Length: 143
Image (cartoon, rainbow, N blue to C red; front, side, top):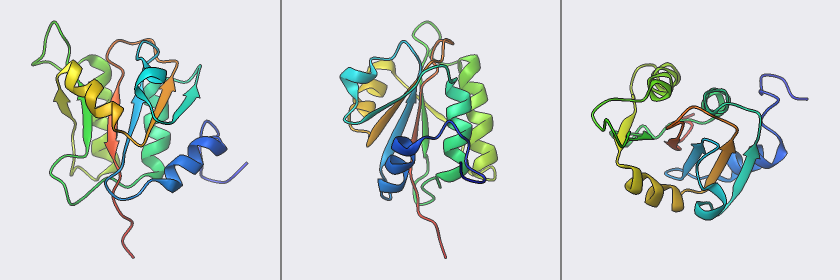
């Protein structure tokens, strides 16, 4: 065990987070997402919600301050102009982690899939809420 690190972040995921560079992206996805198909590197967090995974990752991962947007969610097919309830939670988490600098940007479902394919890694959670998918762009830690 390590201090101040959520125990859901095992050695594989910690290695991925540490290996990521500035501008790399990580996708946190729900149980319905085709993670094995989309991900170059996939870490499974079965039994963990996507919001819990996002909270733990955002505690460690700086967001890219050089970009206007650093967090992306999947648009709802039936209501593209509305954030899914879980995405509202993601937005609150991102705002808190970035001291209000960032919210989330909603992108079309297939555009989200294409972006996830290029992500450094995919974190497959046990999230059962629909549209429980979030992509985060890593920033730098300034001295």
